[in-house]
Length: 377
Image (cartoon, rainbow, N blue to C red; front, side, top):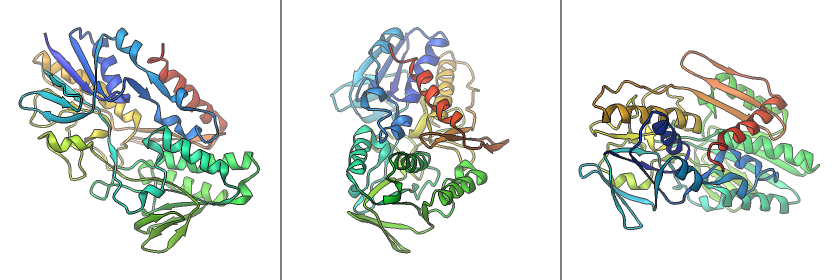
């Protein structure tokens, strides 16, 4: 009897479980995570408008674990011993494994001085809710939105949600008839923010900002934040409320893993989602640094694709077969504006951007329902 251990309870981890069972694996699957829940981060963009709340986005996994016969262990990973094939957690457990799929996600780089003055949206519900309350209490002022990358691994950036918050809050203020009281500013140290989405997408996003009278400050390295300003090497930007997405790096525990790490702090993986040099150890999603084009995204869709590949290859390896499955390099996202949206697609073969229509707003809402129904109930 073999034992597969999965670290994390996000998109990649749960997709790996579903793939393993679908492929006929019947032995033990153990999942380790801080909480037995899936939090649906993509819909945080709708919290400021009241369209979503914490309960809407937090899905208990108890019934899912029962259906898929998963043994759940609560805890934060603090160390991995790949030679002894043991995972250690802060709850005092040491869990052995035959095969391991790492899907614990990434963490934000918070090295800029004064970053506590900015709200980091993808940290969870609490900062977005706090931001929403601050916004509702303002009669007017300057709202700033920005993101940056990991300087040691430029692809380690999440810019898409910031564009969605920017355009969504512009829409919300217009619906509330308060937009004239606010100045909206977008800032980024990159000259072409969102370039991973493709050249056409960058031009379209900047054109949309100009159309909505959103000012863009680009190309100046960030120095620090303060209560009412973003300080850059080019100038200080006044801000009464700042939403900022820093670059990301690997989880903190990887420093105690003895696994190969990329320059940016992620677990190195090959095209098979396998950690080189370690039999039976795989990584999927934001924890890993994968080969591929320089625009390869950190997003849920790619995490799902990598998780499927990792699960298939784990089973191949357990059966002493050659590992051959590779993941597809693909970016798909809908940039939502609260009452409309545009879809961006990119692969090595092609890239396109659709016009902004209400259809894509509803498509994003439908996808949320469709995706989460697998885990609810």
